[in-house]
Image (tube, rainbow, N blue to C red):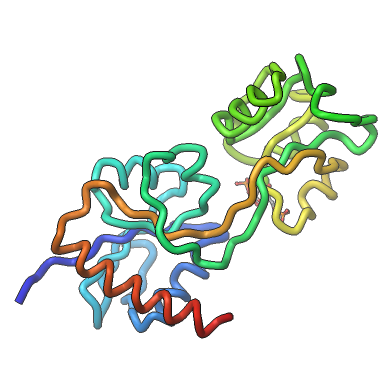
Length: 214
Ligand code: PRP
Ligand code: MG
């Protein structure tokens, strides 16, 4: 019998972590937990889970260090357009949007021409603005992006919006929705045939879980 295991990456901590483990559990895959180990094996399925930082996952997939991942589509759009996207998983739904201070009289995207925008999604913003014929000065920051306009670092921001409460608390308003996203199963272009066969079994189970949820 083969000893191959499918190596699947999930978010180490953050909004996707819990729901990612939950969908694996609902698919009948029990993981001996211990997030501190950064790697854990399933008891009843040939699978290993690696707990990684969201932003690092596209590169791990590309390099074939992991065979698959549960990740936000927004991260793949920003950093992994070359990565194969499998099933949409129906959780961690969000938008990637542009927001400006509530006090700004925003009439349209042209109002951001020549302005400073703080974001963790530079590729996504650049592509969006380019399409609209707008040039902006991007400030790349990795977290707490919504504080930028209040401390004079930027005129607007681009970040994930889920409930909208972070925008609200920071006196910002969503003015352009650039894309909509949810968690998705991502597949490494380097996956071996043997592991692909394991992945297909997992995908079959995940599909049943998704069908049962609707
Ligand atoms: C994320 C994201 C937004 C916020 C959106 O930040 O960057 O700031 O959640 O969610 P909401 O619309 O429901 O408020 P997170 O709290 O994960 O922290 P970070 O930006 O510091 O990584
Ligand atoms: Mg944030």
